[in-house]
Image (cartoon, rainbow, N blue to C red; front, side, top):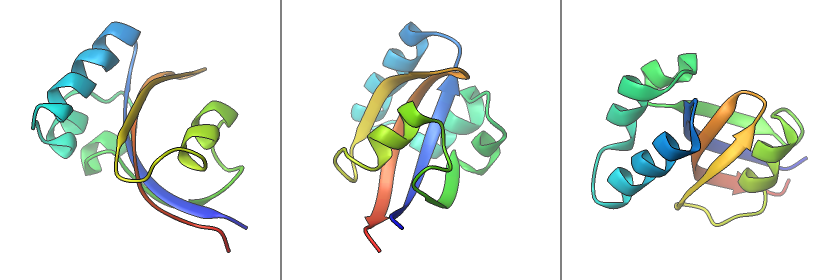
Length: 94
């Protein structure tokens, strides 16, 4: 089963997510922004979700994490929870 590790920032609006992604791409610290803005409890650990298997996250999130480029910021990714800025940290196809 494929596994990945990622971190994310979850917010209510697409606009806020886009602004946070712009800040990260301009050099802002992802973990600090996650702690300040994320609605997910993972925000307190810099948005780190740890390692998880394919199928453990909602489909929209899974699709990005298991298909898009590692080490880049992806988003806004809309899910039932809100809008995510996602950074894929690693992925294996075990």
